[in-house]
Length: 206
Image (cartoon, rainbow, N blue to C red; front, side, top):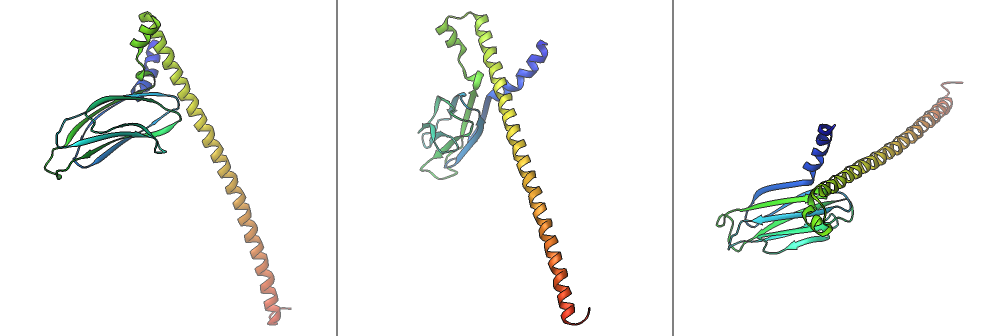
C-alpha cells in the first residue's frame, strides 16, 4: 500500500518542480510557459551569468498581460506569487546590449520554479507553529493529498465540460442533418413539379 501511494504521489511531485538551464543569445528574448491551477503558490529562483556589456530583464505575466513579477538588469534572485485563476503563465528573459551580435557571448540562465506543495517552506511553518518533525511531515502529506484531490476535481470538471460540448455539437449536427434532408426533399419535390409543368407545356406528356 505504501509503495502504491509513493507511485501515486511521484507524478504530482514531478509536475510541481520545474528546473531548466539554457543559453540566452545577446539581443534576444526567450519565454517559458506553464499552466498552473487557481490559488497556487509559485516560487522561483533564477541566476544569470554576469556580463558587463549585457543587460537582462526578467518579466512574468499571465495570459491577460498582467505583470506578476518584473526585474530589470536581473542577475540573481527569487520571486513568489499566488495565482488568482487557472491560467497560462509566461516567464520571459530579454537580453539587451549596445554591442552587436557575435561580439558578446551568450548568457547562461538557470531557472528553478516550484508550485503547490513543493513551493511551501515547511521549515518556516514548523518554526512559527512550533511543530514537531512528524507533525510537519503530516502537514506536508495533508497538503499534498489536498493538491491531488483538487487536481482530480479539476480533471472531472474539464471532462464534464468536454462532454457537454460534445453533446451540444452532436445535437447541432443532428439538427443540421435534418434541416439538410428537408431542404433536399423540398428541392427534389419542386424539381419534379417544375419538370412536369415544363413537359406539359411542351406537350411531351399528357
